[in-house]
Length: 483
Image (cartoon, rainbow, N blue to C red; front, side, top):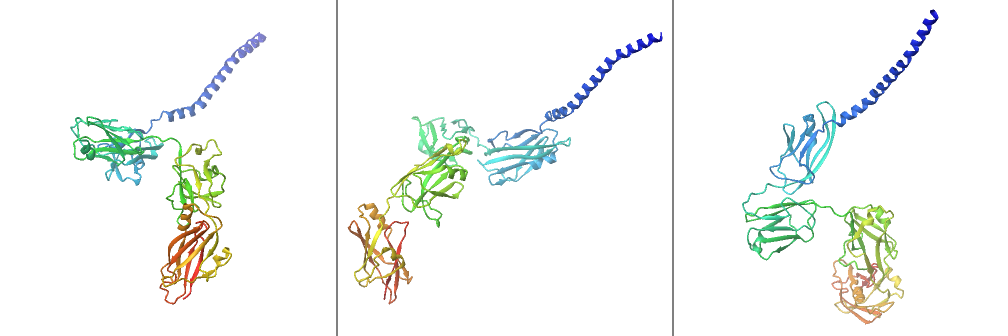
């Protein structure tokens, strides 16, 4: 019996073991679900949390508000009001707009202390951290630009506008105004006021009942336009000019003088031909990476140089030496990266120019036969030449000898234009006056001058004679007239 009982007990114990293993496995499974589920519940709770901002006015970017509209933000009931007020601000281009806050149930209103300006672009900002009633903090980052208009005056006269009043305009969208009956085109056009003032062409139909306004250069971006009639009962209309420009950079080349003192003033000449004392500047429509542009720009044929940036939008090209005379240069841009925005750069002006001919070099300078001029022209800059004018008017003739013949009238005129004689001492004396230029032949220029020694009153006089040659040389010699 004992043996049988032991056998039965062992079998009973073995029969329980599978149930125990299953129970342990079940407990482990539920414990893992509990551990995994806790963070998921937290994330789900945060995801299902009600957003604090329900709506705004203005509701979307570039909306247009009128006088009866109130700038406001509607919150959910979970927002702590005192933490929300400092976050609501309205800014213009000139800075923050002063105003006070007012709660209308769950809506926070912004009431400007000074009336908003008509047609101006403002920005509603709701930025910072707002506190919820459950104690949690919620970050806000809402920025909505909008425009403001005054309340339109009521009118009983029917005028139809196409596009419809309040619509958005592309750059060249015409505005069509249809009147209820025939009008006088001249009087109506004079009575019409477009704000801001924009050059437009006006076209009337044959019956003088429809006027079409077409901007000559396009409507300006981010601008509110209004059309009103000063003395007529026609209703006004407003439009928002809002469009995207193509993703390009416009470049314009224009000539400037090589003058550091005057900060490279713009020259009145055309870029197609640069003079010896000129270079060019590049004007950009957008700010560019300066180093990238300088590495991408070159002249063909190659000409060494660097850029001087007058501001973020303007760069002046400074050649290492002067440009080669009588040479056509072409400006080119070849960016090193295929992703560079300079690949879409577009020149809106000519990209090539020709440099002027080099003016001939002076071989010698001569005066009266009794006066002594150095044989070597290179020593003139370091010499003071004494001359003997004739008569009380101080007449004197200079003869310039050139190394090559000059037959071109424009080159002769350029040489004559670069000639000047000024008084150095005494400073109270008037400067001599050039009477005439005479070309006896293509190699010689005779310059007749009057006024040397005039009003000297027994004093020695000193003068500076700017020679007729290439402007960038700017060579001059000193002259003396003894008493």
